[in-house]
Length: 174
Image (cartoon, rainbow, N blue to C red; front, top):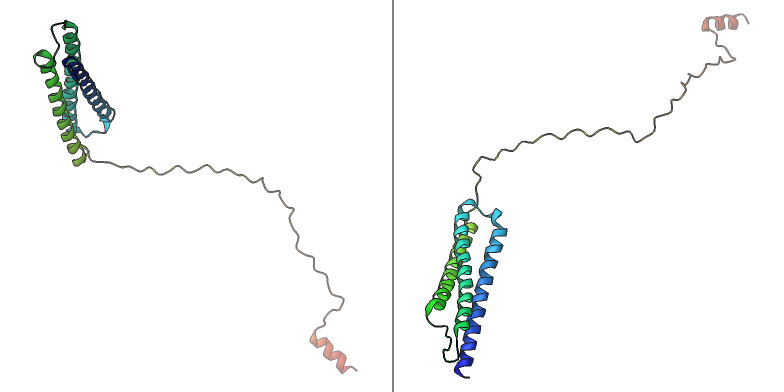
């Protein structure tokens, strides 16, 4: 490979790694912002610090991409562009440094959020209301009133019983 081909590869590699760091940093910030309402109050400040550091890394990455395109545009036939030195090297190093520091702060936040259970500031008060009675719904049709029943009538027997005193008289009179 010639020197020109090496420089093209170096710029391509630097551009791709800068874009990857921008993508990862914005992804980490986006995911943690989405779940930020589930973060305990003590760990929120650490998360905010990590977000700011990672967003600063994204800003340095965008500046590095601009510096690369400016360096390539300024190159002429005899002036070979390089990735070493100057503003491009400074913002690239700042991007990598803030990205690594932001990830370390995010790891600290993760450990802090996972280790400390959130306790409520106020005592928990539970009141139980008894359930309301369910309305009574009659699903059966109303009962049809039955005619009153009579007690059976007593029928006298054809043989009447006589008292014992009268039967003794009859037996004696025979």
